[in-house]
Image 1 (cartoon, helix red, strand yellow):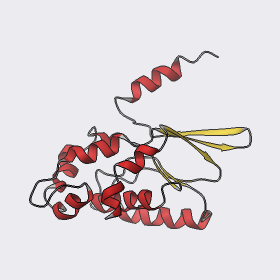
Image 2 (image 1 turned 135 degrees about the vertical axis):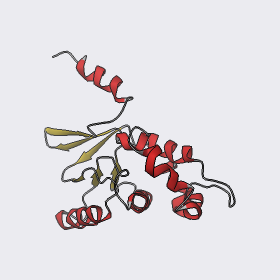
Image 3 (image 1 turned 90 degrees about the horizontal axis):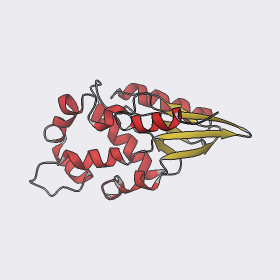
Length: 174
């Protein structure tokens, strides 16, 4: 399964701050809502079929189809690594409802498929840290450039690790 072999490696190849040329389709928090994902992707393709698609994080948590949303986004990233950019949100690092509703799905609803996806041998429980390490490799921010202008995009709640980034930004002298 190409997805299984690449889902940890592909995000690690992206820069921590990814530079993109406009136009870019931007998709905000999905929180496990399949319908929102499908609508957003169809609008992104209508906008410009060749434009990169930037996801701002929070793919899981709250929605009933969070596993399906995550699997489709990972499949898109592996299939179109230069056109799909996945930013890390706070829900991808266990600060959201990772331990409450999402993490148990690894060993319940989707055991077989997730085992294959993250390379766990049949008969063993999934080690959720495999997914967590994939999430940890996600890009932190994107810079969308057009001529001399740029837009910085990031998830609003990038988590505890974002405190260092915030301190660095605040320390910039004018």
